[in-house]
Each structure stands twice: as C-alpha cells, then as structure tokens.
Image (tube, rainbow, N blue to C red):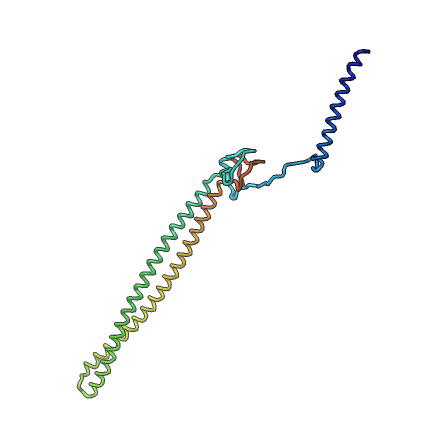
Length: 235
C-alpha cells in the first residue's frame, strides 16, 4: 500500500501544472487571442503579379527558380531572338532603301525647279523679242505705205514677228510642262517621305519586338508557380 501513497503527490503536482497551463491559456485568450478569428484554410495575403511574354517564340533561357527573390526589371526568361532580329534587319534595310528613294526624289524635285526657273527666264527673252518684232512690223507696214520701206523689208519684219510669236508660244508650253514636272516631283517627294516614315515605324516596332524577347519582372517580389522551361514554345 506504500507505492500508491508516493504517487499521490506526483499526481497532485501534475494536476496543478495542467491547471496552471489552462489558466495561463485562458488568460492569454482573454487578453489577446480572443480578438483574432481562426480558420482551417488560412493563407497569407499577397500581391500576385502574373508575368507572360508579349511575343511568341521558343524559350532559350530560364534565369530564375521558384521561391527566388527578384528585383524590378530583372530578366526572368529569354526567348530565342533570331526571328525578331531578322525582322529588325529586314525593316532596317527597307528604311535604308526608302531613304535612298527620298533622296532621289528630292534631287529630281530640285532639277525640275531649276528647269522651271530657266524656262521662266527664257520666256522673258522670248516675250521681249516678240514685242520688238511686233513693233518693227508695224513700223515697216507704215513705211511700206509711204514707199520708204521695201516689200522685202516688210516681209522680213512679218517673218520675224511670226517667228518671235511662235517662240513665245513654245516657251509658254515649256513652262506649263516644267510646272507640271515640279508638281509631280513634289508629289514624289511627299510619297517618299511617307514611305520612309512607315519604314522607320517598322524599324521601331521591330526593335520593340526584339526587346520583348527578354521577359522581365515588372516589380520586385518572389517567384512562385514557375511554369516555363527551356524549349517551351510560348505565346
């Protein structure tokens, strides 16, 4: 009967510890824990950013792993840049060709303008010759009536007046043609300028697409749920 008597103090001490623990837990709940809700499916609230490529292509490199911390702007994956680089080279070649055509059109416009100025200068001389010839013809006609001028002189004056007027008319037609050429050259310059602008826009777009081959982190954070591997074709 002596062993049971020795266990009673031990049992009493254990019960006392349990009671103190229960009182302590109850006091903690009353003072603090009662203000918080509990749930079986609790999770950590986080700001999630989904990252996806902006062009299609084959993944060449994956530079991060799950749970890795990254900084804003850090490259996450690299898409094979071969296609984008080829399109950029093609767009640049088109832009160079468009620039050459623009330079050619501008040169032609300058030639057309110079020709027009030359025609305008020539028509001034033709107008003066025609006026002088007309004046001489009238004078010789008056002299011929008084028999001071001969018939031959009158005929020569008439022929010169006719020739001068014909030259003046031809110069007028040349000016009209030159003005049309100037307008055409100006139109070609404007078309070439538009073509160059379009080609340059294609270059800019190709450069942007090439930059998209590097997918970067939009902001700092931790990588989770990485679902891409080298060799994957992404959209």
